[in-house]
Image (cartoon, rainbow, N blue to C red; front, side, top):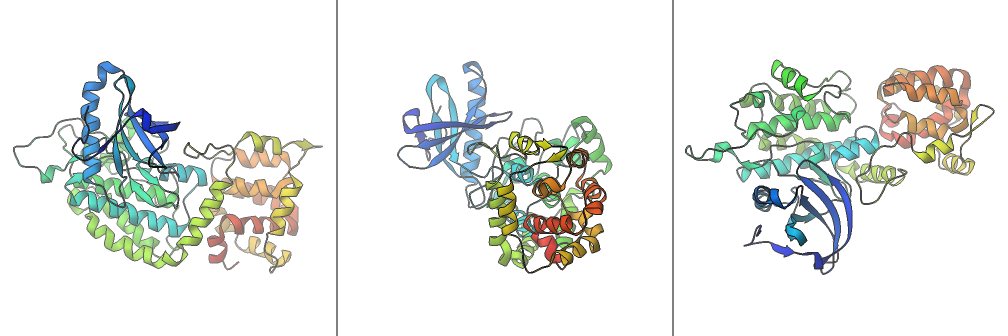
Amino acid sequence: MALLSHTAELVGNESLEKWEFVGSGGFGRVYKARHKNWGFDVAIKLLHGGVGTLMSKDKALSAEAELMNKASCEFVLRVYGVYEGNFMQSGIVMEFMSRGSVQTLIQDLCGRPPWPLTFRLAHQVALGMNFLHSRNLIHHDLKPSNVLLNDDLNAKLADFGLSRVSTSALNSNEKKSGEVGGSYKYMPPEAFEASYEPVRAFDRYSYGILLWSIVTGKEPYPSADNHLVALSIPRGQRPSLEDINQGEAEGLKDLLELMKMCWDENPVKRPCFKECLEVTETLFSKHWGEIHVAVHHVLTTLSNTSNRHSSVPLHCFPQTTEQSKARATVNGVRVINNEKASAQQDNSTTTVSDRDKAKFVDDNRAALIQHVSEVMAIVEELGNMVHTETYSAIEAEKTSREQMRALFQRTFRPGGVTVKAAFYTALKRHHPELVERLGG
């Protein structure tokens, strides 16, 4: 096989070392490897299947590599070359994105990123998609797992396995073939029609659903299977906006309006990405001064995530082995590492009295129940202030709101000023923007 033979460098096994498995999908497997001559890590995307299936898949992989090369820019994953290994193995050599994807970021944080980072992600994805469409390409599979993140959490579009030359850019006598792909939850209503052929409006709809996922830190329609989604979306079903507080961040209302325009039932009414950029650039500029603090906060949170492997995308582990050991009990009371707890207390705010902290918690009960998402992480920091049975009861609740209600009822009410003050200190570490907004 000779992928990108006129532009790209061929990379063989002799040039690569320290192979590590990263993940897999329907198309193939992804590995991290160190290029001996270049001196940095790369990602190798290999095909699934044996030699007998490689002819058709080589053609698809070659098309993907050509498209990625054509779409190369700051906000699209870069292609370095093509891999040709032993036993007719073929693949694409790409830049390695060390921080996984938007999907794994949301999983790691157990919710949305801080608002400055949320607005930057929205803008960078729009920049990448605008460039893609300017090259007469569509992505056709835009979703959180296909937006990858580098060391500084900057976003780049990836996985062009379903990309193709845009219908609107083809001559009338050029007909495309192939089934409509992509993830059902990010597909527009018209895509569920048997005769549908993807156009740029497909990506605009997907962008709207992607924005919802980033803003909420959730997966759309989490309980619905593909069959139900395929029935519901053409009937007007969209992700719920009820739990989003439009006043929580400056410009959030405008971003939600853009989101709704992008997922409009009528493809013609969906704004092009150049129009999206006019909105996202303005919104990100409002939060630009806070982006470095937000990124540092997220990277610190990720670095403290336990039981993860550096070469594999991170995941949220609410029940890790280390945490289970930390919840050992003595006479029914949960015991934690006192040295760690002391260090956390030493780093807490000392300018606010415990009584004022407790008053803040009492006065903002409704807002805290609605907006605190990292409940279990905070409960962990409270240590033996939370009885073991209470911990289990809080953890068993299905939503963060229900967990917060249980925390108020079972721990704050009997615990008094001390436990509320400790909660305030932990809250300020996990949700500094929320504490500030509430006047704490």
